[in-house]
Structures are given as C-alpha cells and as structure tokens.
Amino acid sequence: MASLFLSRVRERIREANQQQCGWPAGGTPSLRAGAEPYPGYRLSEYLGRGTFGEVWTAEVAGRAVALKFLPLDNSTQELRKLQKVRQLTHPNLIQVERVWCWSRLLVVSMELADGGLDDLLTISLAEFGKPLARKQACHYLGQVAAALDFLNLKQHRFDGQPASVRHCDVKPSNMLVFGKTVKLTDFGISVLTTTPSQSHDRAGTPVYAAPEVFQGRINERTDQYSLAVSYCELRGGRLPFADTPPTFQRGYVRPRPDLDMVSDPERPILMRALSPDGIDRWPSCAEFMARLTACR
Image (tube, rainbow, N blue to C red):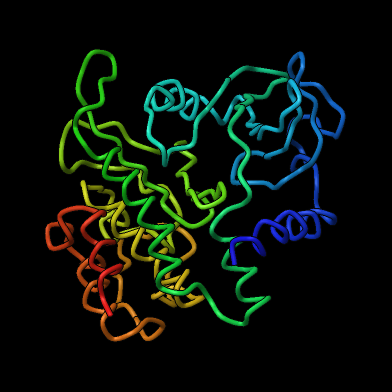
C-alpha cells in the first residue's frame, strides 16, 4: 500500500489540479510555474488550495519544498501562530523553514510531503475498493496522537509563560505523509492556552469538530474527538455523522455516532473518544490509539 501511495498520490494531485489553478477571482495576482517568490525559490508545481490560499512545490538549492501562499489581509492570525508554534520540535509536527512576505502574500516554506492521509484514503478506495485496514490506520494516527499529546502538555513557553496548544482543525488532510511517518500541519486557527477549557470562536471544519466547538468552547480533549472522527473516516470511508451543518450553528446537537463502519471491538473505544462531554473521553490521545491498536 505504501509504495502504491507514493507512486499514485502525485499523479492524482496533477489530475485534480489540471482544471483548476490560480488565485480565486478578485484576489491577489495569480502564481505560476517558474516564478521566484524569494531568491533561490523557484515555483514548479501547483498542489492545491485551502480556505485562504494555495500550496505549490518549489525548488531551492537542489531540493523540493512546499510553499503555502496566503493573502496578507487574511493571514495576520496565522503569522502570529506560526512565529510561535514553529519553535516547537517534535518528529510528528511539520517543520516550518521560513516565513516571508512577497507581492502582498505571506509565504510559508515547509517540508514537502508525499501527500495527506485524505489522499491515501482516496487511493485505497480507488485501487482496492476499501478504506484503510485497522493496523494501517493505527500506525498513522498513533503518530498524530503523539503530536497532539505533545501539544497539549502545558510545558511550551511562549512570551515567557508556560502554555498548551490546541490544534483545533484535526482532520486527514492536515496529516501529511513522509514515507512511513505522519506529521501534523496547519496551525492557522490553533489556540495557545493556559487553561484546560476556554471560550473559542467556533472555527475549524464542522464535520470533524467536537460538540463543544459548536457551543463556542474548546477543552484539552477537543482534538481527541476530531482524531476519532478522522479514524472513522479512514477506517470506514465515511464520517460517523450524516447531518453536520456546513457552518457552526450554536443550536446543533451531535447525534449518536454511527460506527457500523468499524468492527465490534473498536466501537466502545471510539464511543468513549466521541463522548459529548470532554471529561468522559480518554485521558490522552495516545491511550485512545493504544486501545484501538491492541483490540482484536
């Protein structure tokens, strides 16, 4: 599976991007292959578009990197987060190499991944007609769990104060594959906090979000909930909820999750991680994934 993924993911990205490239209408100037947004960085291939900007590959000093471009008027918050979160070092966190401004854009240079876990799922469904096996899903998401627990520790010092980091947008497309390693990326809406629970601006991706996010709050186990939703999708090819609204509606209440996509031994483990109240979830993401890895 891994070798097939490495050979197919770039082909899939090229096919998907052949019909859509360039900045949204009315935005900043279009990017193009061959442009040099920084001395020595030459754009080579368009990879995709997120909520606020585009991602390209670039060549620099004989190696390939990923460049993320964001309009400056939308990226002030992400710039502040990057300046702080990039200080953190963990084998399962993406490493930001450089940040600069160019042509009314914020440019972020990062490690170039083979693709995301969402790409791996798509290829598995297309090539094998089924989603990821439990062993494979646990291998990748166990690494994401390690990164989330590292972020959640109140040991990171920002402006001289110890704090934790809540990612707030955990989903397969933000889990990048580097061979057998997965690294968590995209900290644009992450929260630096000194408390176990706090108010939040209801941001992120609704289909992966915990119930408390719809009520304008996050806690130390909010990211675990999104990790569990991601596991369901990777294991079953679908989400455990069918009625999530496209935007955060305060009155929305998560129904009981449909876990028919996984085996009987996996369901009680996932049900705990998907508990409506954060206090009822697993003490850590690592313990949650260890239970799934050990179940038969």
